[in-house]
Amino acid sequence: GGAIPFAPGKPASAMRFVDLLTHMSGLTYGLQNRNNIDAVYREHNFDFARDHLDSDGFIAKLAKLPLEFAPGEGWNYSVSTDVLGIAVERISGMRLGDYFAKHIFAPLGMDDTAFVPATDSAPRVVTLYRRSSDGLERTDVPGWVDTTTLFSGGGGLWSTAEDYLQFAPRLLN
Picture: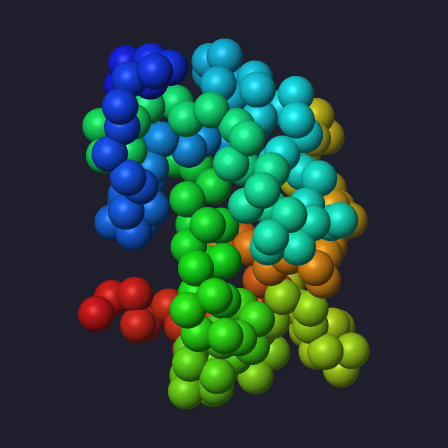
């Protein structure tokens, strides 16, 4: 955040891929709970009600929500990466999970990584935990991850420690 909120009626430049890649799109997350724009996302249950949306529904719903600032004029962690995932689908003509499998996971030998893990991979998938007053406790799959209609460019992949060991060294380069 830190940017001055986008004033309605003020002409804004078009949102660009670089704005999405750098989280300078003006989009936000309701889960941040910092300002009235985040509140609008919460009121529309935008962050967590994705199980019934496909990419067209996601974009249609997002297009009705206000921007926190004009694209390129501030920084805010947001659904920008989700929008990028949809752009990858539309440009490639492939579902995001299929694109990742073909162009990232297969070349890296990440056989157990997917948005929906194969049944035989499930026992090896990393367990989710959440912090509680008693320490860490095992948790069920969050609803925003448990979907087959909209794969998120911002999260939702399931993997194994072995597959992550194939991926992590590539981050160093």
